Structure formats: structure tokens, C-alpha cells
Length: 211
Ligand code: TMP
Image (cartoon, rainbow, N blue to C red; front, side, top):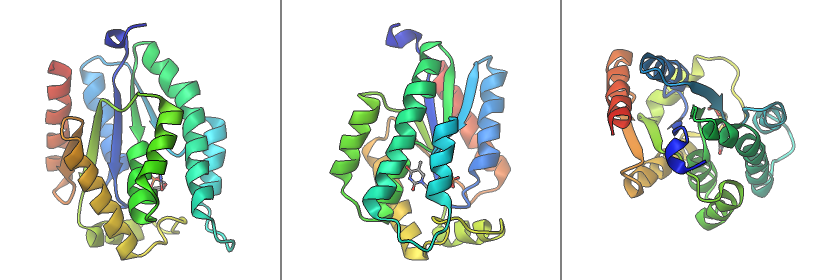
């Protein structure tokens, strides 16, 4: 199947408390209203095996998780998700919207954990070949505000237990990727009201549909 018949691939990114869940539902609503056949999925996860790897990654544990272990588990989950779900769905002409994708590895492992961006790029090519999202919506907000929102959700997972400096590096890495890829990224100010955020997202999606 040629690229022109492929469905579009969208990813939604952001630091903790950026409001990804409610905005993911909104993205689906807007795309449905334009008669797009959409699959919503998430990372880490999206298939039974990848969801099991997600549980391993997010569970707080006494044993220190080595950085390479974390990175390879994330890409192992991604390889399964990409080959068995994302690619076949796009090839059927359906759209795929993923709650996080590889930009999260550049932001969290590259930015947050200070891992090599080159290594992440090599794994990205190994797992995805040349395929990248057609559009990445980054919900951006000050780290302090995001952490206040996330703290209200109850028990914190292994990533949510990181400190403010970690999330400041994650945010910075996301913003610098957005700057490097302006045609793929839409940066949305997630500190605004939900209605304003949704309006911005609708504009971005409608521009993509009409392009
Ligand atoms: P969630 O907050 O979207 O449910 O994602 C789970 C956590 O996984 C989140 O704290 C970010 C982290 N993560 C990475 O560190 N690297 C990645 O590549 C992905 C996809 C997620």
C-alpha cells in the first residue's frame, strides 16, 4: 500500500498532569466528527504483551532499575505495539492516535535521565524504520502546576515519584524537540482552561484534515 493510502499517525505528549486523558477523548471526538476511523492506543502498552511490560516499568520497586533496562523495556514494548498494532492499522487506512510515543523516550530517558539521544535515535530506527508520527500534539505547562494536578490522583507510579528537576528536564527536552520539528509538532498551552485547550486542539486537527 502506498503512503498516500495510509491512515495518519498522531501522538499526544506532555509532562505529568498536562491533561492527556481528557484531551485524548476530545481528539477522538473531533476526528469522529470528520468521519475518520480512529484507533486510540497508548505507550508504554497498547497490546497485551506491551501492557505487561508497562506494568513492569511503572511499578515502584526497591531494586534500582538500570537506565538501559528501562530504555530497552520501553523499546521492547514499542516494537510489539508498532509491529502488531500501529503499522497494520495504518496500512488498513485507519488513523492511529497514541497517548505518548517515541518523543516520550527522548524527553523522559534522554532529557529526564540524561541518556544519549543518539542511542535513542538508533533504537527508534531499529523499531520504526523511517516511520514517525504525522502530527505530535504537545500539551505544555509549567512543571509545578502539572505536579500539583498529578498529586491529586493518588498513588504515584515509578516515574511520578521523580523530582521537580527531572520533570523540568523532561519539559525542556519536549520543547526543544518541538522547536527542531516545527512542521510535525503543535505545542498547546495546557495551563489554560480545558475549553481553550480543546479549541486549540480542534484547530490543529482541522488544519491537518484540510491539508
Ligand atoms: P502515562 O503517564 O502517559 O500513563 O505514561 C506512563 C509513564 O511512562 C510516564 O511517566 C512517562 C513514561 N514513559 C517514558 O518514560 N518513556 C517513554 O518512551 C514512554 C512512552 C513513557
